[in-house]
Length: 172
Image (cartoon, rainbow, N blue to C red; front, side, top):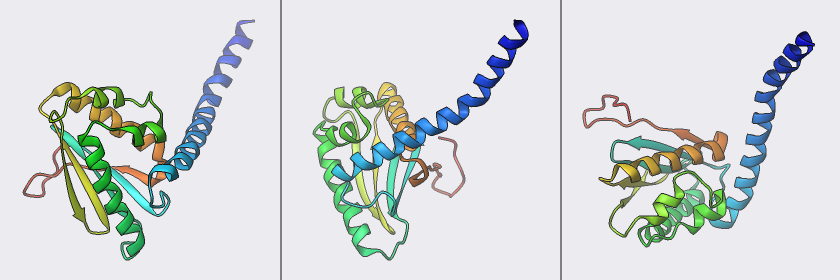
């Protein structure tokens, strides 16, 4: 009996990564479908780069083909608009795309105006939002929120790395 229990346990452990991957792929497809309701640009034609910093982080969205003027324009318009929404405490876009249970989102929604500053900047091929807060709880919420987006956007997202003013790598 013990031999069969060990075999069953091994089979379960071996199958778990496959089931987990299938769940991730299914979740990413669901997120991509809902993302089209909120994001005017193509998720597949862009890359989201999430860089955690000590004071918050940066979300950069760039067209995979930098010369794709339509995608670049839509990315810039979208990030400009969601910055205004986030500053008002309106996180309905991420809620719709990722669900209300998205890690970090409840804390971000509960933040008071001015607790998180959000800067907008155009970059080559797109734009970025820079989130800053002195509140460690909100920094943690931003980091959890970034991690959830990295998972949900799959191959269309990547983690970035914070750099110092002199170009040296700094761990986030």
